[in-house]
Length: 229
Image: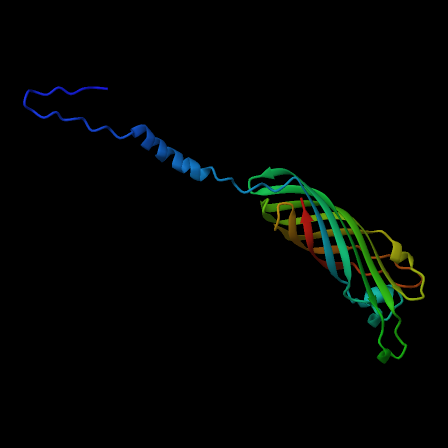
């Protein structure tokens, strides 16, 4: 502590303490640091599994009906199904996270003619089963992200009227390219709402028994459900 000497008869002036410059400087430095200390959005997690209910739109195609010896009006049309997927996200580059995984979908539709058909149309059942690996491009954070994905796998597509044995075309394994996209929004730390829109480009089914081959078809399947990480 320093003392101040004054001449006789003169009042003693005490030095006003200097402001704590170090503390002020520290406050200016720490304020922006505190602002940046807020946690950034989490990265897309390493693993995610999807479980979706699906809504396939089976085609109503004259060539498809002819390949099974059916009337066009006997084809079932829209149906229901399920889709399961598992995905890993090992690599991130700038704004893109690359994913690898696999997807399985099973869909079914059934059609029963009404009485106005006069017994001329048969009830029938249509099934589509497909499995494939997938490569995905993902955009977003661990709170939610969108993606584009695709893969090449195999599928079975059967269309069988009641009382008729399945043809070879109904059990054939068909090369199928799938592509599409969707999004996931995590409503809880490990649970998300998710949806997926997928196109399946299916190779023609083989012809037999005097029937023509089936058409080369692109089927649309819309899925919605949950994802967990």
